[in-house]
Image 1 (spheres, rainbow, N blue to C red):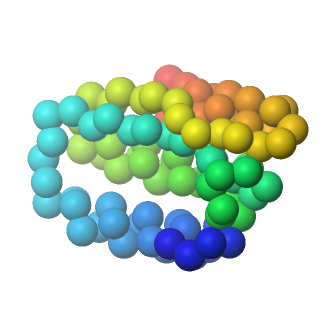
Image 2 (image 1 turned 90 degrees about the vertical axis):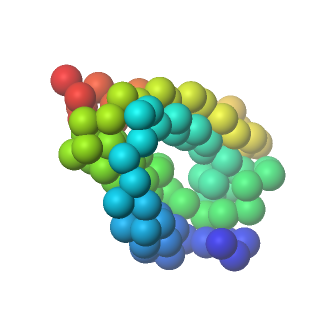
Length: 102
C-alpha cells in the first residue's frame, strides 16, 4: 500500500485479502498485529487512526472466529515519536481480542 494510506484504503485492501484466502482452512493463524501503520509512526509511513487499527483487528478476529481456527497474536512495530500512541494501540489489540473471544 502507498505511503500515507488511510483507514478506508487499508481496510478495503484487508477485506479483499481476507476474501482471497477465505477458501483456505488453516490449522492455526499467526497474527502479527504491528501498529507501525499508525499515523505519525516514524517507520510505518501509513496514516491509520486508532479506530482504523481496531477495525483491522476486528476484521481479522471475526475472520478467524468464524472459521473456528486457533489464533496466536503477537505484537510488532510501533515507533511513534511519542510512545503513548504506540502503547495504547498495542493495548487495544488485546482489548479487541478479549472483546472478540470472551
